[in-house]
Image (cartoon, rainbow, N blue to C red):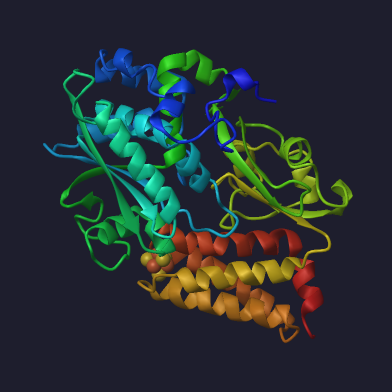
Length: 416
Ligand code: SF4
């Protein structure tokens, strides 16, 4: 288990104090800023590269590689956007992060912006997080008053203007270009045009908040310390939430590569009714394929291990499903979510999600036929091959994972 001395998120449950600047400083936030801002962006980039840090978002790219490419993009003006559009059922991590670790996030924004030559940043937060937005805006105001954000930060010549952008409720804004159009006041839909990946016409770097929160510790404690946690290629720590049929749902920080069973047993108090009562686990939010107990028994929680069993680390939000829960009913609810959240831009996702839901709904309610399962399979293939953005693929993966491991449950519910 991760030692307390190695924890980055020392207040993720709010038990170590409030979100004021004084309290955050007492927990170590901003302590290294004056020192690392004296170094050149290139020196800091090398430290991040040596740490092995990968983005904690959808694509898990090496952070330093992503930045190196971004730095080369020619433009006098560039933006940083932190995407906090957390809206998948079962995933509720970023909310705690904003509520209890706001200053750690702001410091991470400053580091990313300084290294990448950015002077304007937005934190895009789902509008329904009203309380968290207020906390974040107060934290920004406090940091500005203390000279930690704004012009000539800590008299080093670095500038960063940061503000919160309230988003709507559209799940499709997890796709960067849809989020940019939403910020510009247009309908949030993925933009596949020439300027699709720009914000207000300028290059933009997008990050998950969890990735940015790791940066202050990487710089102050060093790349070697960070890369000593986790496993080769999966360095560092991750926030994991565990919900569903467990004794104690929780949000914890652990090293990448921790066995899934340890997370469930040691932190969440185990499966309700014991491990033998486990039917399946969704390992990284509802867009990742669920896994049966035999795989959960030994799989590790990192990018490569979960990829090797045709699932994924996704949001790091585990949903534990006991045998007494209706797995087909859960699949139906997941399909309903994606049917409602398809933005409708491409017919294959719009109609594919609707048809997938109709077929699963029919099977779940005992009206389905065995031939519907074959139709479901073909729909998954077609939608995955032709969907224009990652949301369409996210809609398919839970269904295809279910077909791979729990096909017999669907067959048993069919009427012929
Ligand atoms: S795949 Fe779905 S969410 Fe993405 S653009 Fe097409 S319709 Fe919209």
